Length: 429
Image (tube, rainbow, N blue to C red):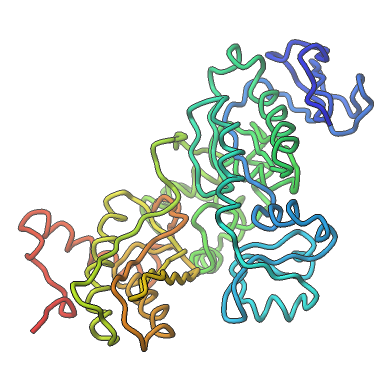
């Protein structure tokens, strides 16, 4: 496949209602088949030349990189993950047909798909592929907010003249370029805001391109509330028990009732249900993760000693997360042995967290199987962080109650100093 040149255009790419995903022919009205190359891969929308916010998601990224590098695996189910006690990092679309999904325990994944080829993650390859993909994105605009190695929001407002076409045209051309240059495919959603762009990118995968505009509220209405950002399993059950099973139920509710029930989160839910999202694409917001670690003066072996070092790190990291307004459901423990070998373990939680208590509980559980040998360093990290405003379940759980306490402690320490409030487990003889 070659990337179509501007000479193939049938219409001004700054003003268009349809575009062919194969030859980039554009038109001023929607069509079912490309008049230039007869392709049916047509994107048509009345607002196609006016929407500027996109969400790009690499298709089954880790698994796709492995299949690209090992063509014999093309038609095989592939799982990228740890051993029998680990979890699935990602899997290809063939494996997904068997019910395998990310964060599934490996033993369950292999039970569902025993013929799967299991490959340990090779992040050097994934980072290189990610840099190639987002390097191409960065040539279109500096307004790129990455969420992880394989996902980002893009704001292309004001780039039409510079890049020779409306954002939709630029993105479809980019999609072709990525596939040709990296051998990987991406799915893209185009919309007026971040939330709708992410929803759109999920509508047509893999290798998809979808658009959501003024019809978004009608498209969202029949969908379950779990599609809204931050509505995880716990909060979804709460909403359903309160009579809000679909996005349409929330859209039809009085905003005052939602605010009375859920506070500021109720207002945000109401906006999202109507397809409104005021968040900007922020390239300065590092979405990859954050961590804290410490190296010991002497090697430590016992659980008590290691946990005593882990707790203040959890407090430090949780406090920073709250200041930055972020949370995470993917927590990572790091240990360095006396031979300098680094051991990392991670866990995916049901809901995003931002409290020291939750970090410590996860870190202690991850540490338990590694005890019995000396270590010189311990660290705790939050991967794939999200805006705390995208995690309304934070107010509806044990995590919520702890969060209120730790937030109050943050205020006291800010006013009276770090030693104003000290947790019992942080006190040493």
